[in-house]
Length: 137
Image (cartoon, rainbow, N blue to C red; front, side, top):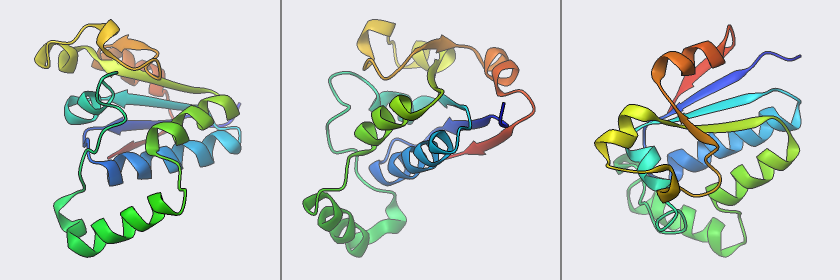
């Protein structure tokens, strides 16, 4: 088995979620298992009633970044959520919500989009991450 890639997603902006989705899809296409741990504002973006919404961009994107992202979307680039769905079809991709963040945001598993496979604590995240690479976005 290839070395696992573990992603900790903290930011809920569309540009950072898209970057995570592209990394995930690339790893899945190469046969690398991917474990995604959703914390705070990234978890909030995975709510079933918000996943398709506009989550803004990181402040450093500015007006030029907004124009570039809008142009890509208009040209047909898949959303970060659709890219993650495709990645899950390609390979071993698990998306887990942080239990502490679930409590903080007063969420139940039923509040989340079906992309999210379950809920785990930080200790379980580290056990599941194994010896692989961990990336924080």
